[in-house]
Length: 475
Length: 95
Image 1 (spheres, rainbow over the protein chains, first blue to last red):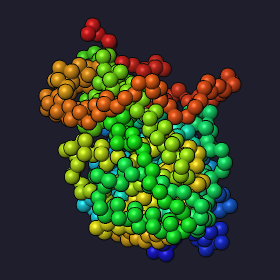
Image 2 (image 1 turned 30 degrees about the vertical axis):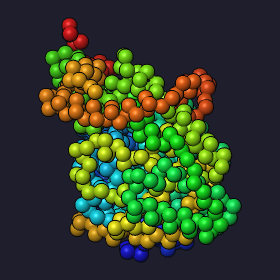
Image 3 (image 1 turned 180 degrees about the vertical axis):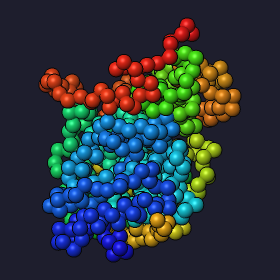
Image 4 (image 1 turned 45 degrees about the vertical axis):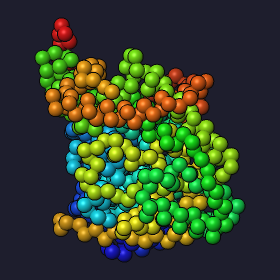
């Protein structure tokens, strides 16, 4: 079994095709581990998988799915009390695509409630622990998916990223996570947080697995009018060299607030990139320091509208009241956690009469400036590079009482979200024994370029340590 | 920054019933967050168009053909109070 766990998804698929492993063995091994998960990474684990043809593209290697994706007949909560007991009557498009490609559902992973958070401590069903140090957070909001992959509780997983929710937990757990270009993947069946920012993406042990999973997630979907797919198929990267590749290191994301150990790992990675033939120069995103401010207007504003649907009428929790309004208020008071209420309040305030121009309209203009900053940078370089997270994994509880400090965890990932561009996080080494993430971002629809460069750098960095040898609880 | 009365007003707009502790906490926390957010008001944004969406899409259409929709009984099975093929709610009252 240890040998099976040592294999990445590509190796599992190859072993299944050669007949050395059966997809059932792979499923059962991971199912057993997921069912005895010591990290709090799972909210639900599948009983059994449907038999999968070994000729299917993903050959039956199962996937862990963030609990924000609706799956027909499977409890789906977005880690909120307000959806406790909800069983969707339909399946999210990306989950359908993965199942059709031969990746059965392994389980639903824990997350920050409605994807609002950077530590997974906002789950109504308890925190997730980082497999590198169980007293530390895995990041968020896709913390369960990242911890499951890092802890060998899933071969690979999917998450969603609104302001960094795939990349930051991937960084803190020492795995690879990619946020695609906005519109690459359908949002149909993905519980909405901030609709102009939300994107599904893969989390895996390495860049090649990440690419393979993404290949089977993208595509235009009539059920999501904002989905456009990608202009070319996602390819599994092969590059070993970076000759002629121009990398720009983002000056605004390398200075104040970035831990020295994190900066050191990024600088080492850039030196390796030069050894592989890339050129590295400094680029500026002058409005990046304003990205968090703009994001914490725009995302809560969209969230306040999207979460209006949780009103105790059609699904989920209802808490009775004397009249309709009292029922709404009682239901929402009991069903939403503190962070969700905070964001609804912030968004409602930013959209309210008399404040709209000062906050929402201004933030939308800052968003334009950030898009323009990236466009100018990509006129000079092919891809931009920065840390993914300003710090390594922090301690559980360390930032829960300071919402602004928590929001600043996303300082390096939010600019790419606002611009809607693809960005990947790969492990770039350890600082104080904890993983550091390197973020590589490119122009819209440049996923293949981002993956090629990430793969070549990953080989040179030779990061080891995933999966962590997480002992599961005896059944 | 943000007054207690504004917090109560916004909570009413958002249909959130806050207890006293939450009102006190949100008044303080939202003040701190808004102070950070207000940095964007220092920027010169004259003539800058707003971005609501990064993908340039106009009028995404599809053929208007009947298709499968969700099964009504399965949808209603998720409702806290379904009756006569619909969602039953308390009276809107007079408030």
